[in-house]
Image (tube, rainbow, N blue to C red; front, side):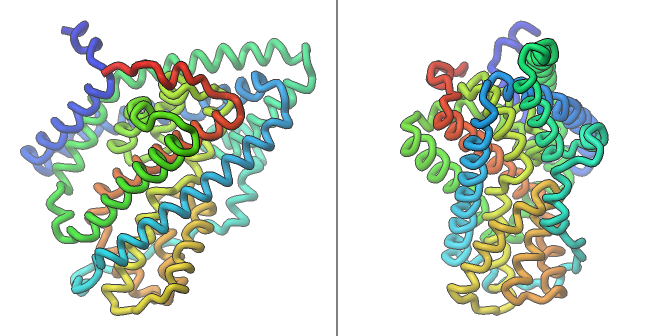
Length: 415
C-alpha cells in the first residue's frame, strides 16, 4: 500500500487531498476546524526549512557564480521584471473591474467596519534590509535581511579565495542537505493540505462567495488571465521560446501548496525545489530571485487591490476618471514594495490605494469589513498567482544570465 502511495506523482496526491478536503469540510462543517492542527503542523514544517534553506543555498550559489559583478546584473533584471509584472497585474484587474462592475448595486450597510493598522513606511522597510544583528534576522525570518547578509558572506568567500574553500564546501553540502529535508517535508504535504482545505471549507465554505459573486468572478478571471497571458504566453513562450505547458507542469507542486497555505513564504522551500528539479533554474538564481519574489512580488495582491478599489468606488457611487485609474495602478505598484512582507499585506495596500482616490477612512473600514468573511478563498488564488510569477521571473532571469538547464526544463515530468 505504501509503495502504491509513493508511486503516485506528488502533485496528484496533493490535488486528491484538495478535493477530499473540500468534500470533508462541506460535510463536516465547523467541526473540520478540529483537524486544522495537522495543517498547521505542515506549515510549521515547511517554515522550519525556509531560513536555513535560503541562507545556505544563496551563499552556495554566489560562490558557484564565481564573479561578484554578475550579481548586479542579476538583481537589476529581477527587480525590473517584478515591477513590470506587478504593473501588468494591476492593469488586468482594473480593466476587469471596469468591465464587470462588481460594486454596482452592492449594499454595504450591513458590513461591520474593520480598522486597518498603518503599513510600515517604505523608508523603514528599506532600512530593515541591513540587519543590526544577523543572528536575530535569521531567528525572526527577515528574508530581505537574510538575503543581504548571505550575499555579503558569499562575496567575501569569493574574494578570500582558497582560505574560504572549507566554508564554501560546507555551504554547498548544507544546501544539498536542506533540499533533501525539503523533499521529505513535501511527503507530508497531502495530509497537511487535506486538513487546511477541510478547515477552510468547513468554517467558511464556498457559499460565502455567493454574496459577492461578481467580485469573486472578477478576481478569479484576473488571476487566470495574468497567469496564462502574462507569464505563460508573454514571458515563457514569447520572451524565452519555451513551452508554457512544461512550465506549468514543473511549477504545479508549488502552485498547489501555495493554494492550500495562502502563504508565499511558506511555499518558498517548495518553489526552490521545483525551480531546480523541474524547471532547470540553477541554484544561484533560484536562491536569489525566489526569496526576493516571496518578499516583494505581489502580482496576485496587486490585481486584487485594483479590483477591490474600483469595487469600493462603484459601491459608494464615486466616479473614477482615467487619472484615478492611473493613480491606483501607480500607487499599488509602488506601495507593494513597502508592505509585501507584512502579514495581511493586501489590507494595508487597500487602505493606502483607496485613500489615494478619495475614499474616506470610514468607507475603507466598511469595505474591508465587508470582504473579510470571504477573503481567505480569494487569498488562496492570489498566492498561486504570486508563486507562478516568482517561478516565471526566475526562469527568465536564469535564461538571460546563462544559469538555465534546458534539458531539465524539457524533460518529461511525471504524470
